[in-house]
Length: 147
Image 1: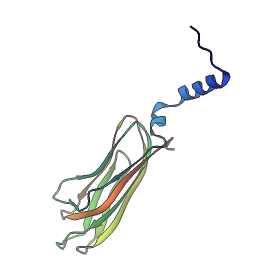
Image 2: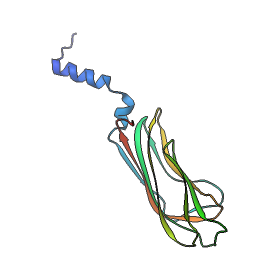
Image 3: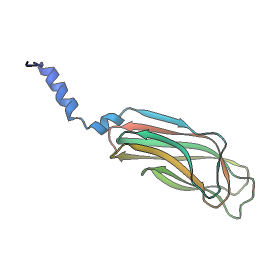
Image 4: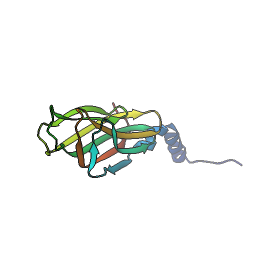
C-alpha cells in the first residue's frame, strides 16, 4: 500500500521532523510552584523550597520570596545563601542586621538542560541564624533557545 502526501503535507512533515525534540517539548510551557508559607531556613542545612520536573530543553526561571529575619540579634548579618539550579543563579544575599524585618529576594536566570530533570531552589541561612520564608514561588518558562 502506498501513501500519497500533498506538497503541503510533505512540507509540514519535514518541518516537524526537523524540529529538535527537546526544544519542542519545553517551548511554550510554564510551571508555577508556590512555596509553603512560614518555612524556617536555618539549622545549618539547605532547605528545598520548590522544585519542578521538566523535559530537556531551554528555560527561563524566576524566584520571588518574602523572607523575615530571625528574632535573635545576629553577631553579623542575616545572610540567605540560595541556589536556583541547575546553572541559573547562585546568590548570597544580606537580608539585614535588624531582627524580625521582612525583605523581598529574587533569583533568576536562563539555561538549557540536556536531559529531563528538576529545576529547584534551595536555601540556607549562611551565618547560622534562622530566617522564615513567609511566601514566594518558583516560575519556570520553556523557551525555544537561550543565546
